[in-house]
Length: 239
Image (cartoon, one colour):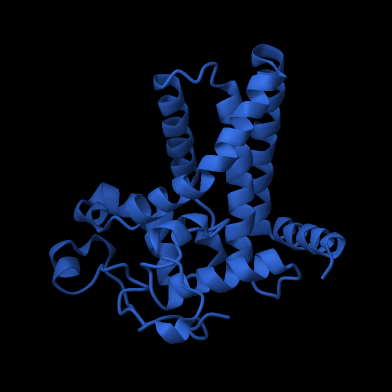
């Protein structure tokens, strides 16, 4: 596949996501917010700082994805209280229990607000001001992230090599070993930190790939999310 063909395939895959009713609204919202903050940041902070913020954000994306996914979304202790258990259920646990349920693939708006607020707050603390450019790139990258993540789970084949590769590696995270392939938009952090895997034959299927460890005595002690763990028909294997 030539570069031109790959670009066309990427566009086709992205538009396929946008045509899905469970993805379109959120992606368009984040894109619109990114555009608004971008215009505002160019006017108030200047084009150079806006572009610099974009480059910084893109460079940090693999690390942010990895840390958020591994240490927040997979944080089992969130199930210890009813309020945090319900939050965890919506932002990630329900998604692992049924990866093909398109209603819970995208991040909950609460988690988006939380993550963007944390990024903006950290930027302010370290002196990256004004924060309008940071908000712009945060929402833009979140829109990109959601497109890639939704593409990893939606029905139908991907046309581009990029989306196909991301889907294959993400499937191993969900169906084989939840402690591998934390990256969504890229495998950079997983490569660096030794958690990337591309061949499922080299892995032993993890018994907690779906429930993230919420089972047995732990689930009995904190029963806020207990449910039938029988996977829905046809949803036990990666595509």
